[in-house]
Length: 513
Ligand code: PHE
Image (cartoon, rainbow, N blue to C red):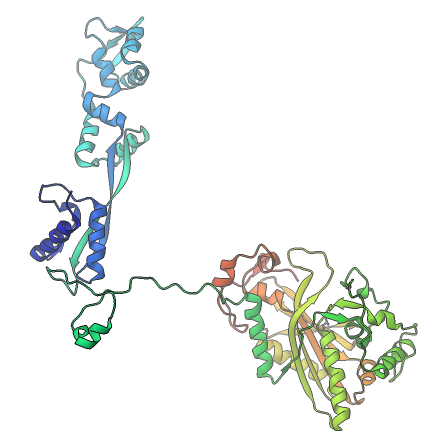
């Protein structure tokens, strides 16, 4: 076999003489042998890396005879053998035929019958024609010679009879590269101090780096986080400040009591709320006067409210829970705003928002998990009205790409009035609920120490539903949990809430409200 230096010289001299090599399968060694393709590709790669040539791959189907195919090419098909064994005058008995050809007698016999070469005559087989042409043998010989056959139907037939096998032959078309030359310059792999000192680096050629760049695997934002970024941008554009939500464990006080949510409220029940076991409670209240005002307003009323008229217990407020809504953070922030106002003597209007996880002990299904994200906004200013809430919601949802919204009266223990927000879903052809909103109750705000003319409008919505709609997911388990496809996270585009992404769920596949 030719050495790789010989193949290299052969390729370079052929290129030099012909300008290009149409197909490397025409190359022959000094001894006249074809060059194995693996040896060719090795040399081509090495010369291509030096830009001495370029090449493209040529793939061709080639058919080889199987052992049985070779046997037929050499000594004829089973049916021809059977025909030849049938004596022109005497015929032959079936038993004798089996003795002669064994298992292949049956195949040959069947084919010879079908070709109408022989027929049955009593116990014997006799010839029906005087002579035959063994087409199968001729086909096998043609394939042996050419590696293929002029008739596609014959190729298919012989393949299904397992007489031939298809293989792919690979060869190359080669053309000269920009640095084509008959001699191969030795390329340096390192720039050395000597080369710098003696100046030889100026003329030296260097071997190219041949490692492929691999983009780093990590650092992909989860779709929920992409949508969260969009919401954050909207809030920042509108002048909001982000609330610190980095506490998932909250006291019942801030999650419920401060929000004027009575202690017997069913939402506090173990069915909806995750209670902590250890520690189960915290009595770390900074401002007992405020706690007592909350107790008073729950038990007996105040600030124009008749209260709930029940016996408010601090033990219930001390219970630690996983927050059920981010409104627990909002209530804490409004309390702080009241304290700052008291300290400075000036009320400063505030716009707060948060986007973070909340927990509810709910039955998990295709669209619900026991934890999810809430987007919440709060605006505190003097003399705000329901009109401000409605007007602001229109601005906010317009920025999200939701132009037509409607409101429906609703109930929250901590807001009055309260409104659910709906938008028309063109795919589902119905109004779907987007969120919940309202004006915080004076019982809640005034107990904190805010002036009666300070009004707070607030709203909340989920992050999961818009994310699933935007990214075309119809099962929440594709978004969160152990079934999440990492490729989904790596390959999904950035989200623009006000632009269509082309994969939003519409029609019957959309997530039901
Ligand atoms: N906390 C409410 C919820 O969990 C949302 C909301 C926030 C409603 C603020 C009114 C005001 O659905």
